Image 1 (spheres, helix red, strand yellow):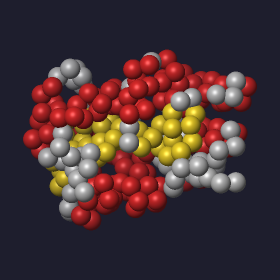
Image 2 (cartoon, helix red, strand yellow):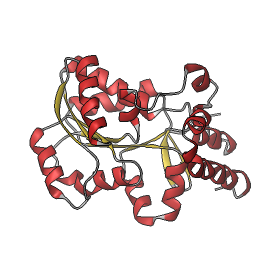
Image 3 (cartoon, one colour):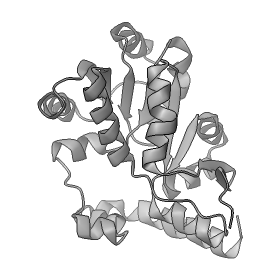
Image 4 (cartoon, one colour):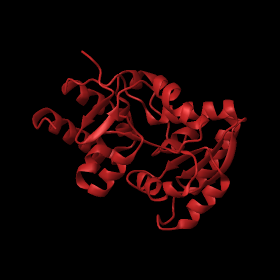
Length: 243
């Protein structure tokens, strides 16, 4: 079966690639050329949100790269007989980009999370990636209409901007202010700052290898049950409505 470069599900086109190829063939060259790049790491919850919110759907569709962060997306692509090569976890992609920034001495900005987590994030990054430059950070409790945040980030001249505002706010913020920047790789990272700092431990490798990271999160954070329902709704639509 010939692999397609993109696989479309519910009007969202996922890049069909591996994490390594994404980095080497797309993201690292974009950083070298200082090209603006917008990445959405999409799981079934994000796809379902695009069905409910047309404006959000257009934002996701406008991204340079939509990546399958969620085993449900990969399973759905197999059902549609357009298999994606692999899941690309957003947290792992963020860490790989931090590694690259560390290697090249690039500037990184961290936007989002609680104020204490934001502080802890830059401390953790400074310890583990000492050769990248922390261009700045700001907690996630602000109004999206506050243009001063984006202006301050632009003045910091970051090469990578990690936005941990959760969906849909992180993609909305990126789409709203992307045009004012001259360069930068922008990526919504959800709760990755919490994971990076150990506030919310990631699932053990055993669970990840079995594609049960979502179930581990549910056990640790039962309040996420509504999000899990979105996954089942997504799979139902793929299976029975062939969307």
